[in-house]
Image (cartoon, rainbow, N blue to C red; front, side, top):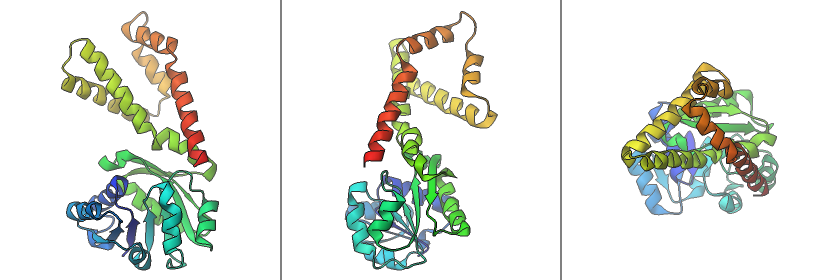
Length: 264
């Protein structure tokens, strides 16, 4: 197989689904393993991939292996496959806190490793993934991995010291954004709007605002100023957000998230 996944949870399925629907790989070129059989069965039914209960089978038969299990299971999985993985196999990791140095130590030999951090919008092919290869991955191999990552959104290569910040700014941030959308909708409901319509207005406003940042290249502050008319409704709302510590709350939350990622 060209691509193997150890772990077939939501993130793995999002990645596989994007890669397949983007015509980067065919379903029969992908294999996944999982200790939880129902998860495998669901992945096979939805995506048409090959499945197995054996992590060793994935390690033996894949050119690229994605370790898509939770961080606490990394040591056990690596111990199971470390003597099976071929020297030219590329290992892709997607767990916070798993540094290149730690991974090298756990595998016990020089291997090609690309440390990545995707996020859940990969499920709708709008993910943002950071990638950090070690010194054994060639330029061509990095491009191969980036091509896969682009199948379910966008990606960028970053230095490893940035990876904990990546967790807070994109890996975990969808949760903050969902809370913001929920709060916007709650506010609209308070003012008489039906909840289903409130969610639609709030989500589309956030989506459109993000798209303007990405497509215009303008500074977010300048875009904000375009909405804030003198003595108008928007600047009054901004005043209250500033008074309540909106920006500071976000900054402190991100600092806590980064600290937690660094300690894992």
